[in-house]
Length: 211
Image: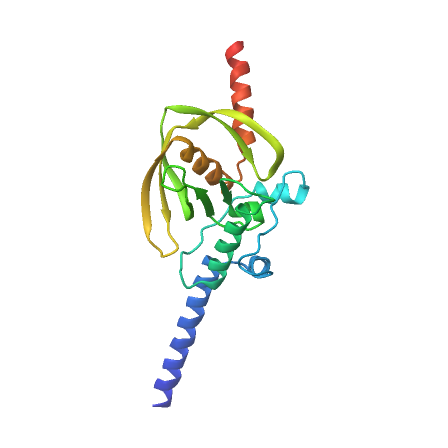
């Protein structure tokens, strides 16, 4: 009887450890949690800038998968603080990505100009699955690149995306026009790509075409 009890306890402990490890791999690190929890959920976070060397290195890093969960307090706090940042008068924009506040997770906020009242919406693990060959020219700026904006001609007019919601629903959607540009811009951030990279490519291609 004692052996059965010990065996049962061992299995419970092993299952608990396995579950904890899985949760840790899909949630925030200790350092990320400390940064997120350093202030109330309504308090904006500091925007990382390419003019700061340490910030710039992080902005060039790839973000990681985040497990969607409406019950994850840290995730909810971070999503709220990220929204507070993009709506703050100091850093107001039409979109923001988690790396821009120092958190390398696949989370973005985008203002939906293609919807009534132009709401802001949050997207977890967004991925562009298709780019249209039709392009559009749009002037872009970035919260992480102060005092600068440039005209880009290489953004796709229409994209297809897939993403997770906070309620752990997986969805697909087709986005077009200016809102598609915002999605492309913010999803680029998750791969450590800045809009300047596209601009530099356009300049190189233009020079090649002149030769």
